[in-house]
Length: 196
Image (cartoon, rainbow, N blue to C red; front, side):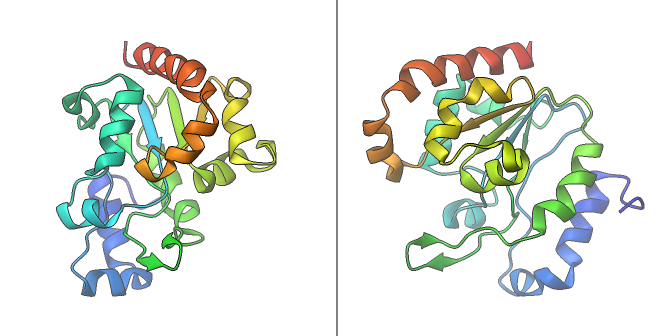
């Protein structure tokens, strides 16, 4: 991957990868944003159907809630000089029996390193959901997503694991009021510090 020296080259390489031929046939482009001066990386699962259709990451109700949790405006969130929006897979994976299919294995391992090599100013990586936490925390994560998110302070200052902001997670949030009470204020403070 050493020949991939720019964001444009990486995006073109992802789009041209034979493993993404089916995505090209559907008219999908790799969906992420990245900038050389980005301070915060938002690492989620994969684009949802609406985001893939619009070509805008987090372009749905989950994105609205996420920006609220982060305490930032949409303009800040969409600024690649501040935020890199880098999911575990840059394409909508399709629908499965229990929701969207998971991100493809090996995708992040192949494409995240060259992308992050071009973003030396990242101060905080937000790990949204099980897939991002499993990849970046490995054996350091707890036995469940809930336990990992509750222990968020153990992963600072580099990582901050959170639950997915999907409205479909309302039951989890109702059972875990400590998230909004404790984690969200800490998240906002860390985000503000990273952007300062």
